[in-house]
Length: 343
Ligand code: TXA
Ligand code: MG
Image 1 (cartoon, rainbow, N blue to C red):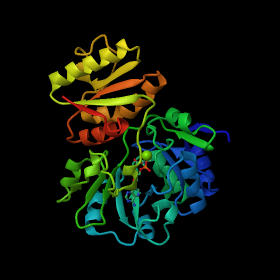
Image 2: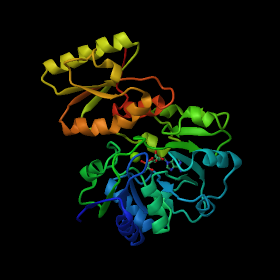
Image 3: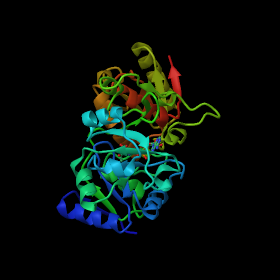
Image 4: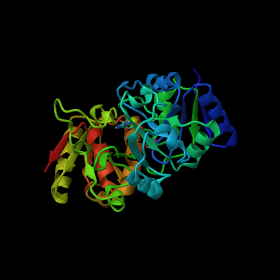
């Protein structure tokens, strides 16, 4: 299959909507990462997403909507707390897990009784949902287990020949996937941190619980509250090591690891914040940004770029986990398969 890339405009949105109505999958930009969309109410179309990604069938998809009215069709019940969150954060990078209605196919929810829903804020995503007239099921548009795409070129790298169309809307602003919040229990549970932070949610609702799996590997035999947590994630070709601790010791350890790997003839890179340019001068460093927000926004782009350069080892400094630091560390720890050196 030939994969077209078209810039976002009225004509390309029409073309994408036509393909979706024909039961095809299409990649499109959102404010978080690129999504791989299909008609959420058509199991045959949804199965094509799983096939293109090589995604395990037990990992459910997020349904994207453009109007809150669509919720009534997709959900069995939306309580007051969920309404408050939607009022504050939709459209935007917040996904709510809610009790599902019968119309949502099991292929979307992996047989769960709940469905994950979000209203993206990216104008192209909203236009595509409206033009196609359907709720769109869409995971990130990468091969399963690989780094999520924040640019159309990343999608092409993973999906060429597997899907008919990629809508190119330029780089994604948030750069990490949406926050996933389970609203079906007594207290809201954060399953995946993202652009809407713990601090922002706690400002609206009390009692938020952060699932242990956000920052820790799943324990042997434990069941994941969010099926996505048990699968391998964000794995670049390079090995990733995270160095965590007090700043001067982190710098010392990072330099030592770098120099040792380089002496072995390995291609190495350091991922670090802006204020380390002097500390790592003359070493191959990739500055992610100044604050955790821009660092998170640039992380996936950095992983894609370093893979492109053939880097074999990435040494990354841990950041604090406040605000966007939680999403950043959640992705980084998974990219490193939880290989952390505490100093
Ligand atoms: O920002 C995003 O959310 C992007 C863009 C395209 O919207 N989408 C995305 O989808 O990241 P995906 O499939 O890569 O991640 C969906 C996550 C997975 O961890 C999945 O397990 C979880 O949401 N999830 C989906 N439905 C769920 C449910 N009913 N209960 C618990 N977790 C669910
Ligand atoms: Mg994904």
